[in-house]
Length: 346
Image 1 (cartoon, rainbow, N blue to C red):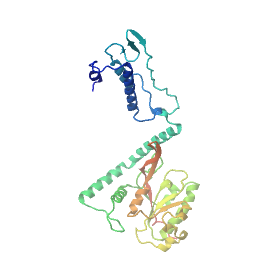
Image 2 (cartoon, rainbow, N blue to C red):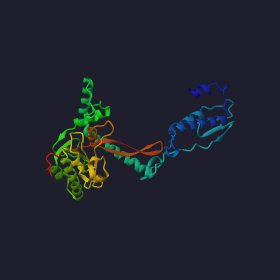
Image 3 (cartoon, helix red, strand yellow):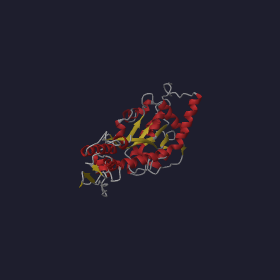
Image 4 (cartoon, rainbow, N blue to C red):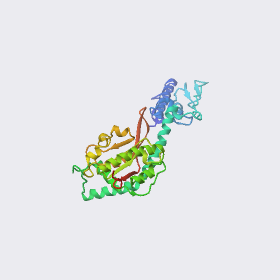
């Protein structure tokens, strides 16, 4: 709607006073300010420069406010007013300049602590998204397999219960089956194994990962557990976490084994530390620096546990509705499959 043509084209119909014109301009200017800020805090709004929308709208409103009898005419809308036959100078509108940016001071009124969190979030998020590209080829193979299964009507079933797998468990199973089998260690830039399953025996595992005092001590406890599992007929375990990275001093050894892979000698396994190897996340094992999982979630599978071990959560702070919370994503990594069959029987 053209305000000049509709409101002021016929002065007989509408002849505002100077006060009315000023109030109208102020109201319109306030509305423009609210529109520009979009509800943000004033401290977070970059000041509007002279050439921006607010002064232009105000000037337009004032320059079109004409009183027919000539007692009040705004000449240029900003600096002068002619009242009757004498010209009176109006105070000029204040010039709003952009704020000065001081080096080292966070922009938009952020505190130093908030700015540090924003910087951390950006850095962590970029690193995580880059790391997600590591298994691009694996995900492509898994996606093609899933599509082929859907087209042919193949339904994967739980290896123990025989029930159809959930969509998530089907995805986990196909993903694990798509992981490449590698014989040579391949590390990413952050020191984690590239996605894949690295199969080796116990002696090879010790030679590659048990260097240094902390690692050697953890490996001693782990080897005792592996011997007990081997006596019980367990043929393989899978290892992930910080121990199979380049981290100099890992906190523990994360591993899993599948009690449903084949019948095992329960008594032989139970002989180790009062049956600690038969209990999911056993406190007795954690005291030895060993973190073990053997029980998948309800309706879960062992391949789902392998998928969990083959990913690591990357987290960063997120600002939402004036509050900080934690967000993140999963990034892929490799894991080691230890063949226990070559371990000397005790």
